[in-house]
Image (cartoon, rainbow, N blue to C red):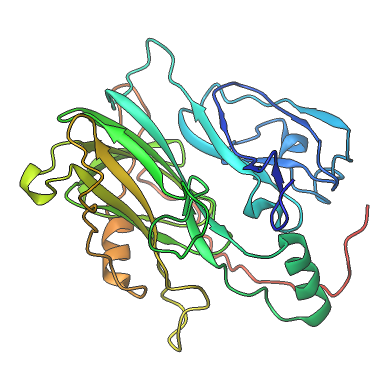
Length: 332
């Protein structure tokens, strides 16, 4: 186990699930459960996973099988622990592959899962407990991460703390980007490269070309990236992928760390470790114009034979959402 965050064998508990059912075998010392984020749960709402809402936590050394149907969904979703701050380190990808005959619009040569997260140099369970006791929100994360690694711009003493994505020139790569951060939207850029967004939250979109992905907490974005960077832009054949925070709601300053997580996109056969990777220009943390441009250009993909959005509206609804604060500790 790890000292600060929930780990097993010194590794983050995250991984990819390419199956149509989920299971959990709790080898932790804490009760927890797992939520499949974005699964519709039609007729299986009891398998949604939120602790104290649809079920009690799965006890230490116990196991529980989640059964649900995702036959009408395709694309990228994700799973995470749904109790305490365990979600900070217990998460992973769910890939819903299309059927062989399905008109899958994206035809990449290969694909990569890009899991964005946060890291605290503290026990994440203790952070939440202290917030309950004091009424003061947990402090900012010490780092953002890409596939569990913060990258080269943080002062880390451990080796191998930068994720590397290896690509081949002129191939098309599908990036399955997942924001597993607790509260922070993130900008994602790759120096010298652009993206074509083809899906959000396991729903196909009209292809949208952009040089930046903006992704909210809990959201997934499928983006195609062609490995066609100008070789003179980085003689070493290595380019940084950068993830930086975005916030538009706090004019007095962001309630999060203004730092940057990095990974390296490395060209096979061209990479030279002696040459530093190129870092992309990063948006300001309050660059609402860039965020609005990205989100407002996402529209659903209408395929032949698929129903379109109804144009006639029968009922207009005005919905407000509030936040209720409870001073009681949950019990089950």
